[in-house]
Image 1 (tube, rainbow, N blue to C red):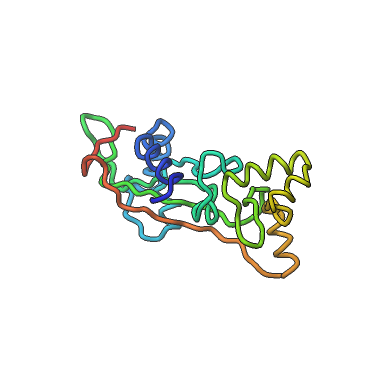
Image 2 (cartoon, rainbow, N blue to C red):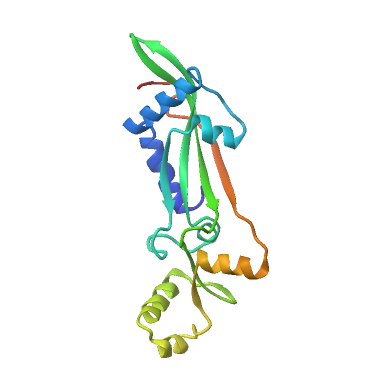
Length: 196
């Protein structure tokens, strides 16, 4: 929660989780779950049975708008999802969902399949956003002397395909899915009626 992409996504999803599509998803999940959104503890069950809405978070274009930091290095782009807990009931003749709590979590695939940008790297680490913008301007225009003058001649943009090549050469490394849970944030009220 201390990173801006998560904070921005959380603020958006906290307000919009019960959008028309979110309510539609909630209705479908309630049918599958016999009218109950239980308090699952296993993240795979949460993702399968109670997630009703999502928003993309993170850096989607060369570091613009976001800071190059630990979050960028570990996650970069991900989906922030919301999973309400509660049960279905009737109120004034309408089906309603009694929301007790809502939880938020990040789901990110470490599969390196798409050609995602992983930053601009050298042996000392990743370039800052400002350095990266200078580098990319010179790199795309093939201004090799400028890169040399900026002491960036041993620096390169890195993409998923580069990591795949590293895996192939070294015959190591695996793909996996990461879940980071921020669970149990209460709504403005403990119980909220939600028509769907």
